[in-house]
Length: 422
Image 1 (cartoon, rainbow, N blue to C red):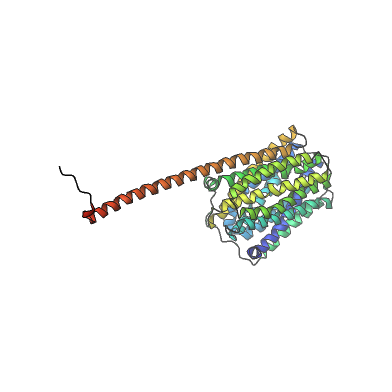
Image 2: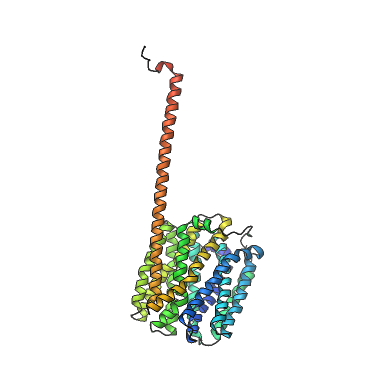
């Protein structure tokens, strides 16, 4: 594994810094919005607008990479995010924040395209699940650290926004100064959604479902904890426990995906996420310790779903299609995440405390039903093709036998049965 990750060590170090800043920002924004008395709908839109920008980045990101390369694209996007983060602390109003979240989402989508296509090019079908899981372990671990940073200063001030900006700015340095070989330049960039969906309907749908559930979590998770009666420290612990659980779950799920059918694994992991979502709702009425334990267990199965889905899709892709597949999967995730927070706010209005997780439970169960039916359908089709192939083989054998017998009779006329005299 170390030999596999060595060529992208600088990239992974940059990812650690970048996502530590993003982790801090992701927790700070809804907490600050709550302090500033933003409505629940406005807070939900902060998540949706982020993923509107994210979806745009999935469309235009590959063209940026094609035009200027992976390294320049990464450094440019990091610089824009750094500036926008400071803007949140200078102008605290819903409309400017929505606009800034669009810009942030755009930049992070492009950054993820660069990162994931880079990693996919450096891995094989036998190691891809493990490589992506190792990347996501780093991703989620440093995001946990970033989320805990909210306790370092008053969320109502500028200091935490400045800290997030510093982390994102420094993230560009390792990539800009790296001597490692960058991925091959992209010759053509296409987003053929029918082809991407046809590559793996289960993987594509799983990415949409993960976007719906996790997009709602990232936006409204802090609000869920505050409504359950816990303070800012409790919010930081809850978000960190969920993300840390996700980090710990990545490796075993990734290893399991390399040794089993990934599409079937998606079904079982989604089912586990639904069951553990019920546990989080119940723990919200108990103590903080039970809530943290349930949140960590939920994160351990809910977060690895995306890595398994992406790996399953890339198993059927050619090397020159990795950027297209990564972009398509990210766009599927973003499509779900755009509407996920808005729909989840409706659940939270109807169900005061546990509405967020009732929403995620519903999404994961719907994924289980769809994926199970799709796998059953593919099994029936494969069985039908097998029977057809066997029937054709039998017909071919019969034809060959007839021809062979005729040739034998022509070559040995004495063996032919005598004709009856008329």
